[in-house]
Image 1 (spheres, rainbow, N blue to C red):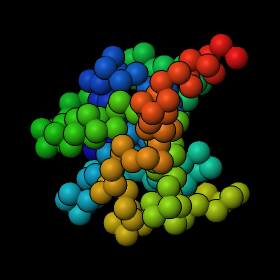
Image 2 (image 1 turned 180 degrees about the horizontal axis):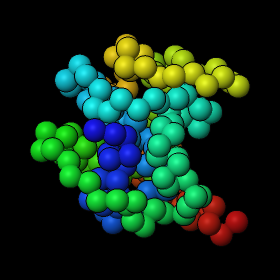
Image 3 (image 1 turned 135 degrees about the vertical axis):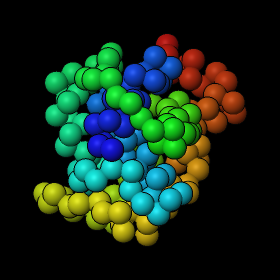
Amino acid sequence: MRAIDVANYLVERWGRVYPATIHKLNRLVYLVQAEAIATTGEPLFEDRIEAWQCGPVVHAVIHAFGEQGDAMIAAPTEHVEVKSDAVRLIDSVAEKYGPLPAFDLVSFVRRPGGAWARVYAPGREAEITSDAIKASADASADASGPELFSAMLDAVAQNMPRALKMLETS
């Protein structure tokens, strides 16, 4: 399987439920790989993953969908047939991380203890290897933790219901 197959499946199967920009899609593809490594010990795809400033990036995904910029990706580049074991894995990741906005996914994959944080070096195209993912907490962490922006907004809305309304009108 190729990373672009994972991306196309995510867009085709989950794109209407959890619309994605190129930033969100790249992070979801990375998290599918991290989940595959965590659950099976093996990568789902062999494409190189690099640690860019914005987080993990797969070149094939950028090349296929990058022209859309920050717009929501409307359609896959091709229809792909995915084996049932891969479908279960990808669907699980989509259900777990798909509801999160791109901003939170970028924060999540760049957090301390993750593979990106261990290999990223400004100005260098560092590879995030399967071994780096295995040694990280990427597939085992909770995606609803307090470090996420949306979780912080939810907490503010719950604890100070008028605070966000005041910001809206200021």
